[in-house]
Image 1 (spheres, rainbow, N blue to C red):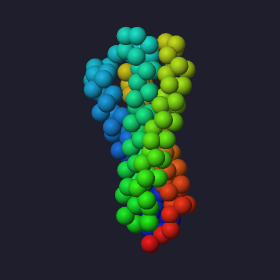
Image 2 (cartoon, rainbow, N blue to C red):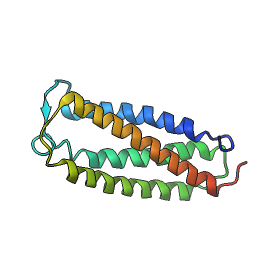
Image 3 (cartoon, rainbow, N blue to C red):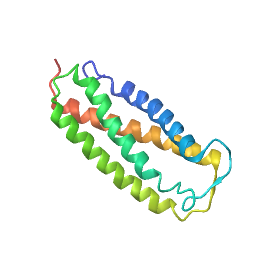
Length: 142
């Protein structure tokens, strides 16, 4: 625990939230009927890594830091800039994953769902941890 902010707790919350959001968006985009999904056209499962990575990185950097800001002397501008930086890094990571997976053969619906949930949760935990560590290392505890 760093001051009154538990990085582990915030990372665990991020896993749950981003896993659930990844599930919801997967179901909205790819439906609820199990089938084979193409990484490229027509399903574009690989391309979905880009918006997923941007959204997860942005929200995982922004929300925990804004919540923790109440407990530490954290300025708003660095939090917003850091979140934007994480979103850009998420876009780059999502683009790389899209390129790497775009040529793979179709994958089963259930396996694709598990990958997307695990990826969203893992990325969320990593970004939340990194963003909070950076924030706490530069902000005095009140």
